[in-house]
Image 1 (tube, rainbow, N blue to C red):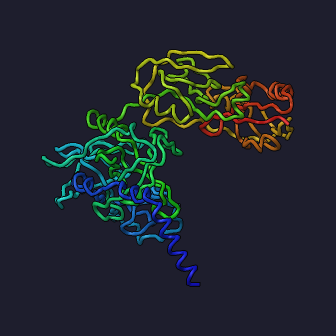
Image 2: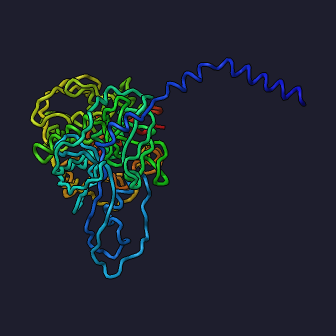
Length: 472
C-alpha cells in the first residue's frame, strides 16, 4: 500500500513536471479590472415607472399583462396564467429596472426599447449616484433600440467598437444591473455571430455565453479593448436566469437606429412587400436547383414595390443590391438597411434561369394591414393523390384574396398532412403554376412520377409559404 501511494506521488510529480503549457495559459487569461475601472462610469442604471390601469388582473407593482408578456418573452420565461385579481381594478404604479450606457458627454444614452416601452417616468442613476429624469427621444421596437436623454454635461462616455471585427471565441464582458445590482460585470466569449432569432428579422444578433439576467437589458457588451460592440437584449432561459445563451444587438445597428431617432424621431426602413421562406433541400429539388442558397418568395403583396418591380412568387433571391443572400433571414436585414427610394439590382432564379431586375425600394409602413381570412365551407370529401380534398374559391373569397385564384383545402390527409398542409389553407400554385381549378391541379399532381418532390404554394391566414410534398 505504501509503495503504491509513494509511486502515485512520484507519478503525479512527474506528470506535473511535464505540464508547463497549462501554467502559461493560466497567466494569459484576460484581466478585466482595467476595463471595469475605465468603462464602468459610463454605464447607468435605469428605473422605469408606469401607471397601469387596473383590469382586475395582476399584482400591485407588477407590469400589466402586455408589458409582462413582453418582459417574459425577452427573458425566455413562459407565461403566467391564473394570476389573482386586484380589488376594484384600481390604477397602480408599476416599476421595473434596466441598464443603459452614455454615448455622448451631453447626456444621450442607449438602452433597449422594451426597457422604456410605455414608461411614464424614466429615472437614470449614474455611477457617481447622481439621479436624473430622462426624456425618451425615440424607441424602435423592431430592433429593440431606444435613445433617451438627460440634462447633464461632461459625462463619461463609451468608445464605440466594430462588431464586424469580432471573432467567435473572443472574450467579451457585460456591465449592467442584473436584478437591480448596479455596475455588475460578467464575462464570457462570443459563441456565434449573425444569429437570426424567431420573429426578430432586422438584427444579426451576437450570441455569447456571458451571464445576462433581468436588469442587464440595454447594457453594453465590451470587447477586451474596452469598446462597446453590442447592446444586451435577450437571453434564452427556461428558468428566467442565465443559461449561457445571451444575445446582443450589434452596436453599428444600434447607432444607426439612434442617429435616425435623434434626427427624425422615427425610423425609415426599406420595404419590398413580399413573404419569404427558407430554400430547403426538398424545395430546391422541386424547383430543379442544386443549391439551397437564397430567399424563396412565397407571396407578393399587390401594388407593393416588389409587385411593381416584377418580382413573382416562386422567385429565389440570390443577391440584393450586390449583397449575397445566403439564407432567407439575410434578406429582411439587407432590405431594411436600404434607403427608401433607392433603385437596386435584384438577382433571382426564376423557373431555373437567372434573371436580374431593377427594383425601386419602398418605405416600410408602420402598420401593415391584415391579410384576408378565408371562410371554410364543407363539401363532399374527394381526396387526390397526395391526400388533399379541395374546392375552388367563391367570387367573394377571391375578392378577399385580391382576385387571386386558389383552391380551398377542405381536408388534408396522407402525404399532404405529413408535409404540414392544414384544413383551411388555400392552395395558390404548384411548381410556379397557378392553381385555377381542382381538376387541373389534380392532373398536374398525377403527372408527377413517384419519388419526386412538388412545391405547393399555400396561403395560411396572412402568410404564404411553399410546402414540399414528396409523391409516393
